[in-house]
Each structure stands twice: as C-alpha cells, then as structure tokens.
Length: 130
Image (cartoon, rainbow, N blue to C red; front, side, top):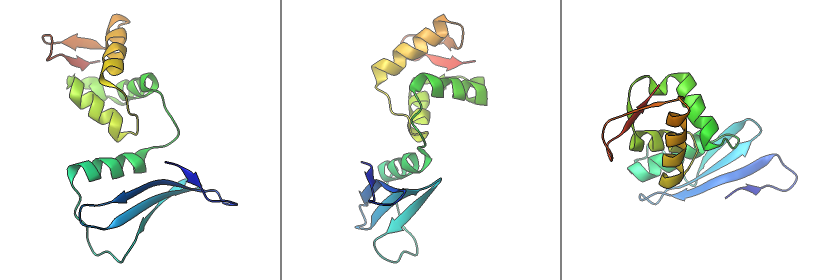
C-alpha cells in the first residue's frame, strides 16, 4: 500500500496495528523513512511476524528483482557458507524482495545450472553456496 500525499514527496508505505494495540505507520519522505506512532511510546513488544513486516518495510528500497537480489547476495558473501532454501527465502524477504517458493526454487536451480551457485545435500534438504 503506497499512498502519496498530495503536493508532497511523502508516501505512506505501511500501516500496522500491533497485537498490543499500538498503531505504526511508515512514511517515505525523500531518501528517508519516518516511523509514526499513534501515541507516546517508551517501549514496544513485537511478535515475530510484526518484526518481519516492519523490518522488511524499513529495508525495502526501490524494486529489485529476485535474480538481481540473489546476485547481490552472492557478491556480498551471503552464500560463502551453505544456506538452506528457507534461509535464502527469509533473507530475500528481509531485503524487501518477496517471491513464491516455486519461482525461487526455479531461479536457484537455473543459477546452479549456470555455475553461479553450487547445490549440496539431498532432495528436500539442499543447501546453496558460492
């Protein structure tokens, strides 16, 4: 959900009501992101799902395709140690790139075929590394 404020460079990226009842909004303003709370906050507790949603929204930048982000992960050394499929999918999500499992599996397989990644393990428990 991206709503642009009329006559402004601000765009609302997310509204989230936490299990605690606190409401959080994230607004993109220029190159920054602003976190807005609906009431004064000293501390807040987040569920795992709330943490992931909030983190992914804050980390999300301009749209990056799954293949491009996988290559960024290779270049950054993410795959220097073997990573499970679930770990790769979570890392992509945390970087703001969401993909369906079947699509991601196909991309990883193609990258293995092209020699960009290596695959070790057995069916259902493969790990990928560079």
